[in-house]
Length: 235
Image (cartoon, rainbow, N blue to C red; front, side, top):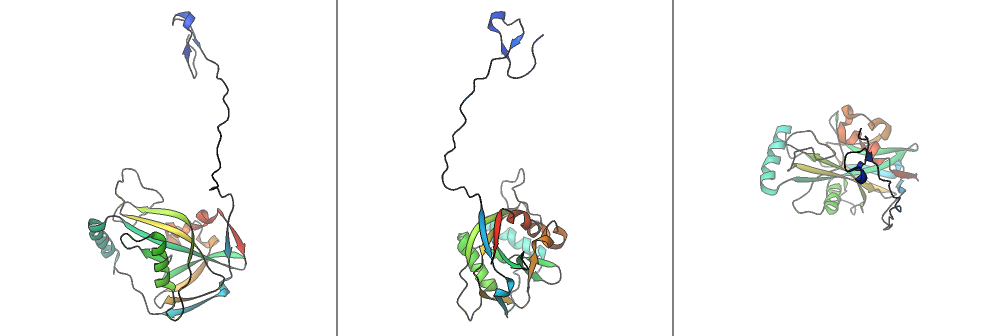
């Protein structure tokens, strides 16, 4: 009876009619990995107290689209002209009572978003995010904040002209309609911000965001996981 298992090699002396003989595996040297200096085992981010920051107000900023339907109609028209939409959003973190909090913009009673938005066609992603942060939170009576973009922490894809977005490109999707990239922003020790009057800036603790897609949506509720690789230094 032929042997079962892997690998199988016929015994040449048996003429192919005998039982299978298993060839011994010759030990090989362990593969050598050359460190290129790009591996970061511990990534630290400095957090400063929420009280270090001053938040004023400025003129309201309204969404380009009056409804969800209008937003996807505009996306369809832009897709025909310039292709996939690119978006960039910033994750700004402070601490309160020794706990990390993410700064979110609240519109109405139940809609939360990260500061950022759509990039212009051909615009550099990092420079575009700096522009968007300044437009949303910058003060006109002070020099712009020196935004320090530290790291890409997540990529989300919109496969169709619909609300669902995923942290991967779904199978059989060759032309995603939007690519949204989230960046960790290192805030300065102190800064002055201005929030549009129709928004409210809130500091949400990570424990409140965790597994809370019903309250904050799938992207924001995943931030505790995506931020867990960083070592926070509380100043």
